[in-house]
Length: 457
View 1 (cartoon, rainbow, N blue to C red):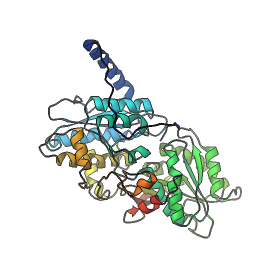
View 2: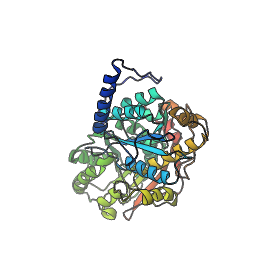
View 3: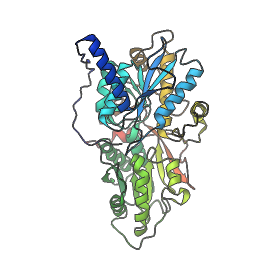
């Protein structure tokens, strides 16, 4: 998550696109040149061997995400989208329609995010599917103006839960933090310190963590902002440890997360939620923690996965014993067999596609929703309008048990706290045991009630 605070004003009504006039031939040449430049700067691409928008019965969609930036990157999302297109087309397409996937690099900036959205409009994409971008104020106006649905965004911005053209498949970061707060309320007998990005998206996290803590009878967390693109976090680690240990330092024994008693011992918790920079924070945290009493740690998937745990030392690292909330079952669950089949058959050893990556998992679920929406149209036209109509029809979309059944309404129980489009507020609770992320609870945990009670100001 990146992006500094700015004030935006955006209507929820669908605006009209402004169309320029002038010499037709000159305009066509200029448009071609601009399109080429936009494609290069935004990092847009298509499935190899497929031309965007070509084919009488082709369904054109787009998947975007930041790649190669100094902050959070999700290269597996567009890579998996390309693999899915190859896989589904080898099986005859979606209900007989060839799937054309455009991909785009939003570069973690608003200019590129808007360029990606403009290309989706230009190429007549019927949907943007399984994407990550925190610059919703830059891309949603273009999608809304063209009526293009946004299916299965990562859930990193508030707009994904408010735009009438958004169809989220998970509860985003707010649901993860609310769920984590409920878990930590029972396992942290001391103070809780949250380290999160100093960004617009990061601002939504403290109220949800506090709501979960409050539901378990715990005090609010210490809210600590940090630059998401920093190269080290020594000062933030020290501050978080002071907060979680009541300010004590010197003479403490560094313990592994979860090694103390859950109650009565006054053991605090440090909760880093910095996306791709969590590993950088934990490097600083490991060096600083030797001077403080032992603390627990907790986090959310997207900031922590098995790769991060392995890189931090596995069972002897700072995540051992930590609770982690996620949207979906653990990667080893048999319900991921379909996604793994796509990867094994069509990813061509693309190392950017990690089956434990929540971005890849979200993209798989989003493309399954798209497939069901297209199939529901039968012999009818497949367009942005008809796909949107299928999503708005009230029908239920299944995900093979990876989420509860999905159905989007124009309002929900969480509308009062700013999430009218949120249809899935269930999370999973996982824990690091012997260096492996495993399920800590068998079933999903519904945090709708917890989120309803959040103090969002």
